[in-house]
Length: 451
Image 1 (cartoon, helix red, strand yellow):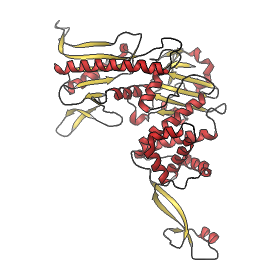
Image 2: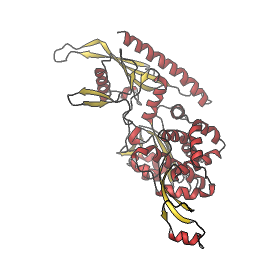
Image 3: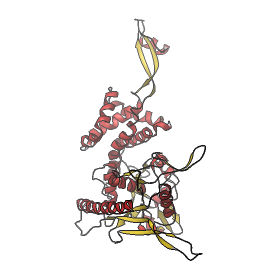
């Protein structure tokens, strides 16, 4: 079954995938993660608009409502594909394009319910590996305490009596002992090495790992004693000893991803009537990061959950208070422009959205703000200018100001024009839409800056 994100569907329509509904209905993303669903990005630290408490499929009266996530979930022979509500046609080219632009994923994500969908979700795991490897190794190679066993005459640890008697009888000058050492050569880095070697064995492996050549070379240099025969033992050790330290949370996610990839080597995803699996992506996060790829050269991009680029609303005698994280702040100190990425239709941008951007504009003395949203090609809105009012209805003196303006600016998402419409056609059309979108944004920003 295919559904769209942020939509309602009759409960009766889900009868064919009742097993999946029983497993995910009214459950939070946090619960689904524990049951084996891989959620991107790491929710607590990175996602701005969803949390572990968000429910993927919520029962409301006689309907099920999907949330702000897209992706794939499988249980036995049942399949649920959650597509972007902004895509039109049989293929979700828009979702695929977001993944390609933000995560540099190759064009392999054809969302359909074919029998080989298990291999497609597995491809998701494999193609996410370079992103997570790079993210984790920004903190350097993982280092931890491990215990090494030795048998020589240079005793520098705890003598192992039983092993010494077994290996060194009669005594010939060697002593069996073990030593606890702080080392890069540990179970987690070995797991990463095994994952790298497995990906290399795939037809697309070397091309994929070329994106993270430096990181791969470092792992290979650290784990010099690689042996395929140890793979099962390394998998078990990592399953029993997950990374727990908060500082290495990126390595914890990488560890989970490596285990999913290597388990698939031995047991095909979807094998067995009760095997539950899938991968979900935060649509709002993908949209915001995609917008950053378009306007990042002209705008700074604070990140709330990542605690990057925090701004303060107030100052006191003791300290500053009221942390805020505008999605985008124009670079420079003069005539600042605020932009807020919204993964929602233009008619849904209202109420709290208005208050949020106006608060940012007040803080930075900005005269112009933007809502940047995906626009269906059939909507025909393009942009909508909102002028801030002054006065009060009680005093009967409400009138528009000419110095503060907010613009809802849409990026048109192409829709198929014929049955032969391909992903390459979509990329060509959205490239043109991006140029028009940026042209309008720059033009309106320039006018705002000149006021």
